[in-house]
Length: 121
Length: 304
Image (tube, rainbow over the protein chains, first blue to last red):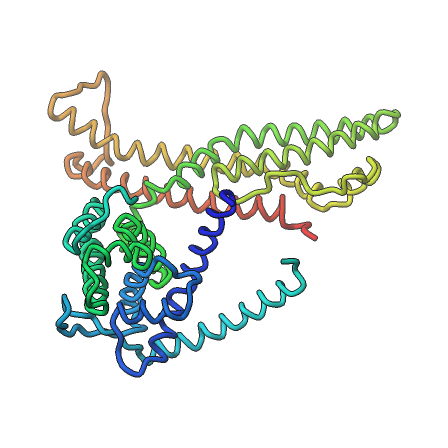
């Protein structure tokens, strides 16, 4: 178990590095209203453990980078609970990129499933 | 990790700040901002839970300060790399590019190769002519054929060595291993492969050609370098002589008869510098050309 654990974590880390941007973009493509970091993190948490468990802090830098790359746009609004919140919404360019990423993801998914088929548990 | 659990949000933020010490300051600010937003939102979403209890729980969702710090350092690097399109190389000015040749290692590799090529050229040429004529002469004896085969194998080996030389000095990727041959093929097959490979014959030609090429390269390198160094040194020495720093026994002549040395000196100096850098460009270009030529003849020509 002790030998497997670090390797599982490594695998999770690599997977999450590859999928976090995609998941965030998907989350925001679905959203009807702009979302702020905490909301996005909580929604992803509800949707399951998986690769993001225990590292919701990892989402924030990714959000910021997506913003900087023009896939998202953001505005700051004051909040009662604490510091002003940054609300993110997806841009047109972001939607374009998302659908392209989605194709890639579906191809990858098909490939992985095909390869996994018949592999012993 | 749990040696010290923060009790308040302010403590958590302090710990995060400590953990990020030394990182980029705007990244620290972002990290603190994000953490505060998350923690305060979490607090607002869970009324009735004490701050300390909440922070203990947060270690599993948002992460402990040290973990968060690690994540920020990692993610910042990875995501930045993934999302920013590769930068176009900065377009240097023509002036800069002209003089940058002096700091390009390939220039000196090419220069050294050109100076060395006379020696290698003589060796290759001698080896090939001796080997071929001895093979021809011995052909009437029984040892003629094995001698010829051994000689051709040596040509192949030398072509690998020359490849190493070309890669090191001219920066053209050359093979590091002999050509793959089926492990269990007999020695007759190997000999047949050696002789039916056009590269073996082209290597032979390359080795012969290296003598004239080497002579040209060596002469060019020596002439260009000594001419430009001479052009630079003459006015410098003349100026030093004028200042009385050095004195010459005998005659020191510079410039044409009608031209005043004081007038000629700056032009000679500038001309020398210009010629020196032009020579470096010429040598680098020759190096590149020869690298491509060697690769073509020794590696690519017979590729199947």
